[in-house]
Each structure stands twice: as structure tokens, then as C-alpha cells.
Image (tube, rainbow, N blue to C red; front, side, top):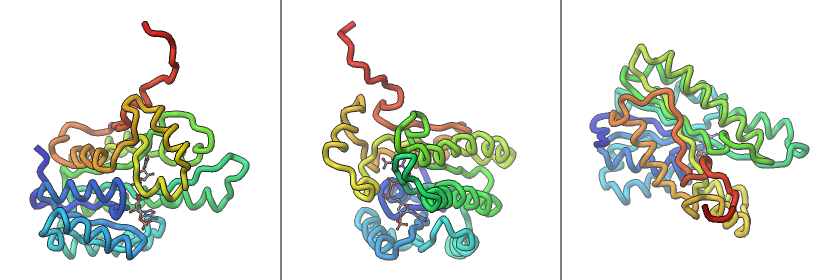
Length: 260
Ligand SMILES: NC(=O)c1ccc[n+]([C@@H]2O[C@H](COP(=O)([O-])OP(=O)(O)OC[C@H]3O[C@@H](n4cnc5c(N)ncnc54)[C@H](OP(=O)(O)O)[C@@H]3O)[C@@H](O)[C@H]2O)c1
């Protein structure tokens, strides 16, 4: 059902976790994929990882070292994509970081960094990609389950992700005349390298899993599967939506009352 034959899809933050596994699904479904990230060694290991599961990956993967926060880097990225594939059919604006601190500890530098990557860079990537994209394409933004709930210490991160829910609705309307669909995905607790980066303790990891009705963290591939669907023509009538993929977390209330 999901078919990317002949298409080219950009995945920002495509070198790790959710982005990498989405890139893998796109490749498996016959597409070309462009992955970005800031770290050269991670770009190289992502290319090697994709080649392990898709032997012709070197012909269909373009990896570009590019920092989403650097607005000057967007045009050169798009030029490389057009130079290599002569088309752009989808954009998964997924690159993002998390900074989780109590309100009193958040600095102006934290604020600027989070907004520069999670919102400002994402917004201008979309703005510049749209004129290059084919009509009938798809744009997908990575929001978060945290945009749907109040979480102490995650206020600013959640605010950057909640802004995306609003962007999706308005962009879906504005780009509908070109049949470009715009959606977001809100992952729940997903076990990706970001979890190591925020140095979560084993106790906190297990406590998080215990909040989830499915009693576990999700895997990147479980988000990649849904992201690939939303980017593909299989989702041709889905636009202006946020899809929460969280094992039931946001919909649950953790009251452990007696049996009914
Ligand atoms: N894991 C979760 O539980 C979870 C839940 C909800 C939402 N999310 C969201 O999902 C997205 C992907 O996160 P993940 O969990 O897959 O984390 P991850 O494994 O750390 O992947 C993040 C990716 O983004 C790239 N990246 C970070 N900053 C960038 C920048 N300024 N420019 C370009 N690329 C950048 C990283 O590569 P470099 O570091 O080399 O640049 C990497 O490829 C993020 O937007 C995150 O907020 C994650």
C-alpha cells in the first residue's frame, strides 16, 4: 500500500532514532531519501545502517550535513536535492532536541536553542521547500505527546511542539490548493538516542513505561511506519491532522481505582 517508487523525500534529523527508521521505511517502499543531521560521524553510520537493510541504498540515499538552526544552510540543501534527484515529493521536518529543566533553571540560551531548532528552523525549512516540492506532496512535522499534556520541567520543549499543531492546521489550508497535505505526528515515549542524551535514570525510564497502557516504550520503527504512511499517497485524504502514536499514553488517566 505504501509506495514511494520514483519519489524523493527529505527527512531532517534523519540520521538517528525516529528519522532514521522513517528513512528506512521510505527506502523499503522504493523511494529516494535525503537525510540530514549536524554530526558527520552519525551521518556516516546512518548511511551504513541503511545500506545493511537496503543494498542499493548508496544509489537512493543522499546524506547532507546540515544544521536546521542555520537558515543559510536551507537553500544549499535544497539545491543538492534537486541536483541529485531533480524532484522533491515530501518533507519530514523531524530534527529536534529536548531541554528539560525546572522553570527557574531555564536560560535565555536554552530558550533560543530550543526555538531555533524545534520551531524557527523547522518553519523556514518548510517555507523554502514548498516552492521546490511537487504538487500533491506531503509535509510531516514531528510534534510530541508532551504537546498534549502538562508536564513539569517540559514546558518550553512542549510549547515548541504545541506550536506545530497550530502550524499544521493553517499550512494544510494554505497549501491545499496545490494538493500538498500537511500533518504532524506526536510520538509518545520512544526509546531513541535522545533518551541517552537527556541522561534518564533506569528508575525514571521504568516509571515512564509504567504510565503507558501498553506498558513499554515504543521503538523508532513503530513511529517510522506511521510517518511513512502519512508521507505517502496511502494517506491521500489525510491533512491538517496530528496523529498521536504513544501506546495509549495521552488518552489514558492513571487513576488505579477498583474494578468496575
Ligand atoms: N524519543 C522520544 O521519546 C520522542 C517523543 C516525542 C517527540 N520526539 C521528537 O522526535 C524527533 C526525533 O527525535 P529522536 O527521539 O529520534 O532523537 P534522536 O535519535 O536524538 O534524533 C534526532 C535527530 O535530529 C538530528 N538533529 C538534532 N538537532 C539538529 C539540528 N539542529 N539540525 C539538524 N539535525 C539535527 C540529530 O542528528 P545530530 O545530533 O547529528 O544533528 C538526529 O539525526 C525530535 O523532534 C523529538 O523532539 C521524540
